[in-house]
Length: 235
Ligand code: SAH
Image 1: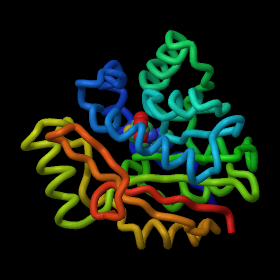
Image 2: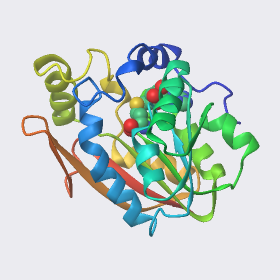
Image 3: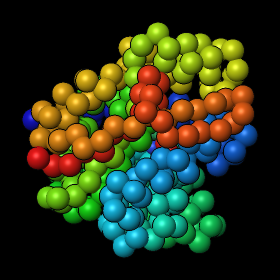
Image 4: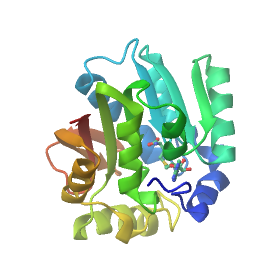
């Protein structure tokens, strides 16, 4: 059974309240701007080239990744439950002249009417904001074509990720708004792999994403202690 509304309205409202600043490279979404080229390259590589692929970006926010994937030649649809968020994403794509289709919809609802449509499904930095991540993973499996690719990213749950992603980013450096992340919702790679298996998705690869807030640099790494990405395929 797929829950019809597997989302936290307070979370969606919080992202909506800051939606005007999605594209401000100096605003609270700065870490995502810095991480974007690194995660884009990872996805491009893992899926064997984004060009001409039909891609769904789940929890697309203001469209940082959706637009970047479209610029690589993918045919991208972005979905998110935030009304202001989707408006900002639509306007930015229009102004930038990048063709991306946006819908205000959850992964579960989209899966109900578009099963097996996408070559690639991405869901970055969203699972740790959702009440039941396992349900989202089942929806991602439904949405991807047999033989297609799913790429997700999230934050690991341990002392280091708490210190860096919450204490450091929200309280010491003021990079993120306080309350952006809830430690108990962070997801260990073993949990993500377990829920994925439950959704008939097989893990093909895992990679860490290092973010250095002082130098404002990001890099792919083998260290999955904090931010990490996982490449999955339907079993
Ligand atoms: N994936 C984007 C944005 C991450 S921020 C990026 O990495 O650049 C998390 C986004 O997930 C927010 O825009 C929020 O509105 C959205 N979100 C949270 N829960 C959701 C849900 N259940 N369904 C769809 N979108 C959701």
